[in-house]
Image (cartoon, rainbow, N blue to C red; front, side):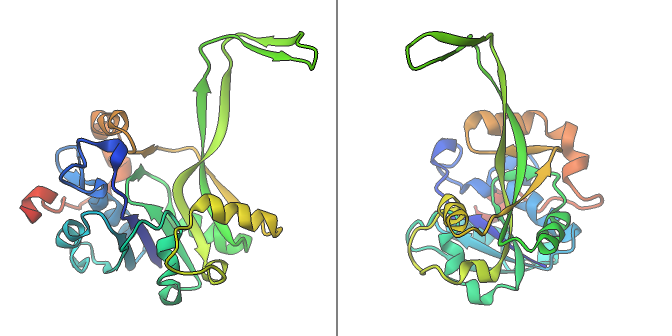
Length: 250
């Protein structure tokens, strides 16, 4: 039960919150770092090992997490010397990974059952399984469809569109990654498109619970605003927060 947590990004869209802290360490609910919540969840779902792919301000993440003993998870680290996108960091230590494993962004808040995702992946025999969420987008205007002659053939007033989006949580097979070169940037989009081009379709794991990707200040504000409402869903019972990141590193 091995999880890889991608925690090496610069968090540019979340500035100024990420000026002094890497995004996985920004506080939620004035008690927890995002990474604290994730590690608590992983342990509750039976994961006993985690590799943290770190880069920007990675020393602060090391200082906060240490060897993972506070969460009863064995933690090791893989440090990026240069940004390697989503999948690139994994290629540098793919030989150390088990046959099937979990990969997730270090800035995701969700009550997704990580074990169920991994089990679904193994059962499906897919090269990659992506946790997906239906995101609704409201268009504030009437939309038009036209033919080649420029005539309107359809009109819809303020439609609501629904798209399946990646949650930033995946299950993978080690053999899926072995053909790709190391030390070069390689994104999830490139992996998916390459698999599709070779007829190796990834699987989807649909989810309709709580999910928030903390990529922008509005997302971060929303996470703190609703934290008390979703606390019981996000946190295993009986666990105390690890001291706030600024207390540990400052």
